[in-house]
Image (cartoon, rainbow, N blue to C red; front, side):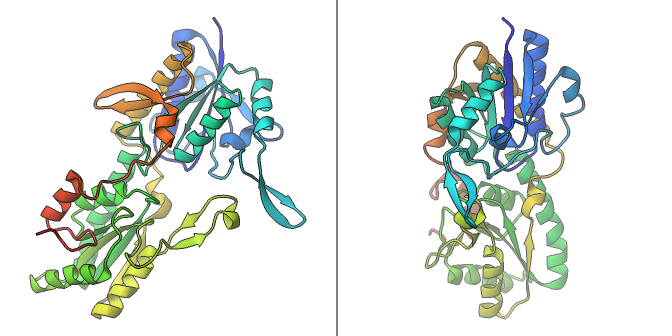
Length: 366
């Protein structure tokens, strides 16, 4: 039976999105002779006059190594709470009925939504409102429950690790404390795993509120042992035990999306004042999202794309593709968005780091 399926990419971009699009198009057209269309700029492409394009086989040629997404994306296009200007003020309104109607206008039979926690929550709601939906998990933060790992994360960890390798030499040369801010709003996977791989001395993550006295003590102990520099990795969502996360813009101020940032400057200033040492701040920011995906992410994204098409063929909507162990399977999308995948403060990864002498912002266990 001939079908038309649509695909969109929502939320922040990350390496591997194009590989998913390629996997969906090749699987749908070559194996099933289906038609594939792409919705542009996430759910925003279904607001007003729909913005979409045909995705024939030749449209995905050469996509596998390309970063970003050819369809564009938006992390502000939530049709359940869409920013609308009225009388000089912005208010959030539900325009989901318009999105559902526009989807059906396109003649599509199903939608593949590729995104993180926010995108998949929207997908879940639109599924209930009449859009047959399959989710594909994407986030460099690796904070989606329901899958062992999300594509994009492996590449981001590699990028941060390379940056830490490069910072070691300059930090050692100038006897500085380098404070490196990485992404991680609610989960510190990038900070912890890249910090371990990049031989960081202090790693601060949202799951463990940090004690600045303990951090300074750890840096001082390195000086006693003869190390004249230190590398501190801090996730953007980390915060002191006696404080809160640093928010640059609240949701209402930033079209519904809270923007974090600035924790590295706070930590560096505190260390400099308390210890009278020279500190420098490096904010890696969106460089973590850019560039070509790693081989792992290319393969995982391709597998996810193929699995999403299989689920549509089987009529199994409201599901999210998932990696469990080495196998790609699927889970109820509810399982994926009901809670976040966060680091266990008492788990093996944290224990490994602390045993190796890495300061996690708290007094080390005896």
